[in-house]
Image 1 (cartoon, rainbow, N blue to C red):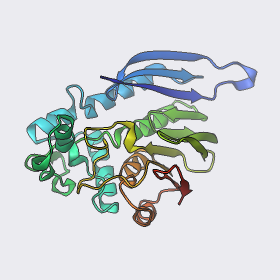
Image 2: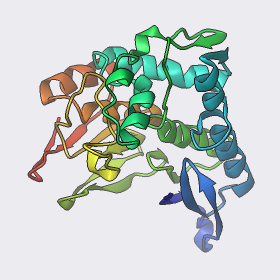
Image 3: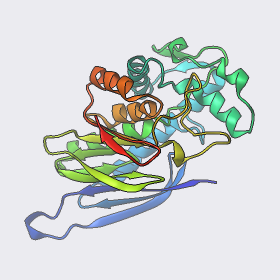
Length: 285
């Protein structure tokens, strides 16, 4: 069953009192049925071309650079792939290995109802060689679903800035802002809406959120700890200058205690981290 997702770009185009126009598109992206609404002067063709390029690199649901890499265990790395893997490596190091995209074979085994014992032995992002050719370790496969939505938000924000837009909120599942400020809700799957945070206009320009209950697997969460870690938090939201960095960090922070999160947050140069525990208590570090 496909997930359904509503992505939106709101561009401040109501200049000189003129009403903002809007355009819409429906299709598939990031493994989901997607409705995309662009308000204002955001160029739909440019956005759709970028989404298609990201899908062609990172999709696990169709032929892509990533599926070919997983199948062969090695392959030439595009600039886009190397950029995302370099960010993944940075977060992997800062989180002591908790962010680890090589959990893909384990994810697949658990989705099939298997125990995943053999697949756990293949986990280890540090075994990957990232150069002009990318090489995976024996039995390894990658999922970049914990970082690609943030990459998409960053890329589309950059394209819209290049097109001359100065006041936009980009929602690709994670947020990036031009101008602002924009107030975003902090919502937990169990506890509901618990607060708001602000991005843009002099503050952090991006925010990403992860919740282990958002997509349950048999026997656990879709956010898998490489060492079998159970989630510490029901929801984690991370603010910073890069939606891609925030996306990867929020994925890992779900599995980490507050002290470890604070250390990684400082090392990665991130902004505030909002934590919601399984009793619905909210804290910010």
